Length: 97
Image 1 (cartoon, rainbow, N blue to C red):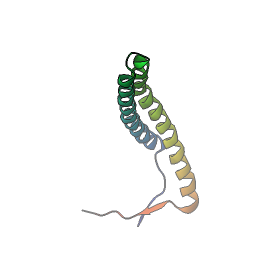
Image 2: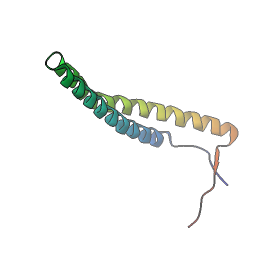
Image 3: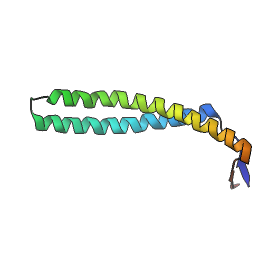
């Protein structure tokens, strides 16, 4: 049994940040589609505002989710390293091929 004694904080933060960007992009596209659908139902009364908000979500959400993922990934990796120092880390079994 091998133990993960520590994690590279920056590498975990980068992975979590990229996953956040991907999730933010998917959610931003969904928000834009919903905004476009609502704007179509409203006709000319505020429709462009809804669609513009959806397009804004495609830009803003990946940025915010990416930043949040990077920061939370760094914090979690740092906390893991702290706790693993006390209890010895997570045990894993690796297969040799």
